[in-house]
Length: 232
Image (cartoon, rainbow, N blue to C red):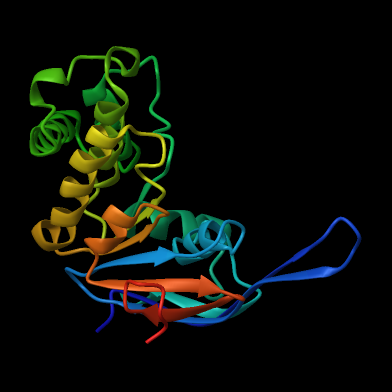
């Protein structure tokens, strides 16, 4: 069974002139456990919108999303928030770490929100920071970390609640080549090591090439590509 499934997703917005803008036009997608897929496409094609809908940050106008077997249809905002907190991890281009907290405290934050006892949250956060190569930096604040270290801290935070799905939106878009490649190495291991469904939106060819499947979003529809821009 697909861990993440989208069926017939339509998403529209109202333009400044009052006209309807069709961003997603019947998107279908299945992502399985331990699978990494990359979504590519031109700027403005709707890739970030797609990721927000897949992660239940936004609602489609039509269609449905299933996250680890649970449909988002008909859920209240509060129910969607609970589903996201339990099942979905997010990594964005900018790390969004809380500056006043250490790396360890940032990774602990989702666990604390979920009501996990402090000692257990600390143990889990230390384990995850060690996994991303930051065990010795756990007491440092974001301002004391490099851009790559900040983003790896954000990855550890996204994994804190053992999500079934990890969604990454241009995760290396703000990094230099060396830090980007280290992050790519980490992301390419996550789906396998954590047995999650990983969807990466990226313009970076190196990251996209590490995915098991590459999909292109164009004219509101997702299509398989052979990695050379040719639709399969």
